[in-house]
Length: 314
Image 1 (cartoon, helix red, strand yellow):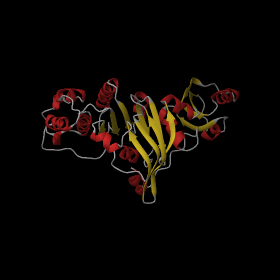
Image 2 (cartoon, one colour):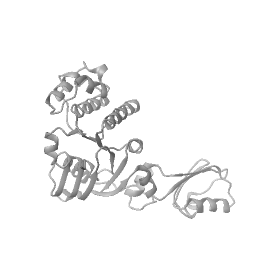
Image 3 (cartoon, helix red, strand yellow):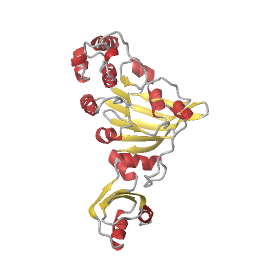
Image 4 (cartoon, helix red, strand yellow):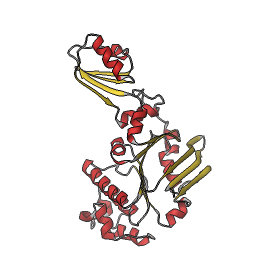
């Protein structure tokens, strides 16, 4: 059985097509990152998955059921960007309420422990920091023994240590057999956590693979070295294979689609680079290259959506 299935799904808001003929399948037990620039349709896709919007055409299924049926059966937990929390209650009280209402409840103490909330369980919700509120939302999403967790920017507002603790907790959920789908702007999270990465652009699925496969698809390498003599960036850009160049002090950073030819040309020009490093692009650079529409041209930033398009496509 598939965990999630989008089949030729389209959703428009007026003239803006937020999701455009989207077809994808997720399997039970996967941890999948959903990436894309602002206005790519990530939040709309998650809203369709959670039954908050209805597709104009196509179908969305969760474990072979409609989203609303799957949610009413207790199969789905979610952390969304929007939505407030009850204020004049303690953390323990709001978590207990969520557990009491869930068709497949987990013990309150276990939920609080998994979310790292034991130390602040007696604190009023309106006295929490932004990161602590996110941990409460995570606790509410895991109040029941759901088979699928859907997370929209789950670590927004968390500091580095809180983010690490959050993903440690998520790995615990995955070890229990749950499927996790999360949208994030922290690309290092996708690189470190996800088994699979989906890249959306203009409501369409632009790339689907492991983080390593996404990086390889960009087709470029990063070359860094130091030079004792100054070189003009325009000259560096003329080297074979080079698509982007940056000089900071004595350090040269190049992006090249043919690293061997580039390095050979540097030496052929009579230069002697020190501390030469050649490596594949990180996920962030690969993401920029793919969403810019030209693999390997990672120096080009993805086109920003207009304010109206961004609001509609979310």
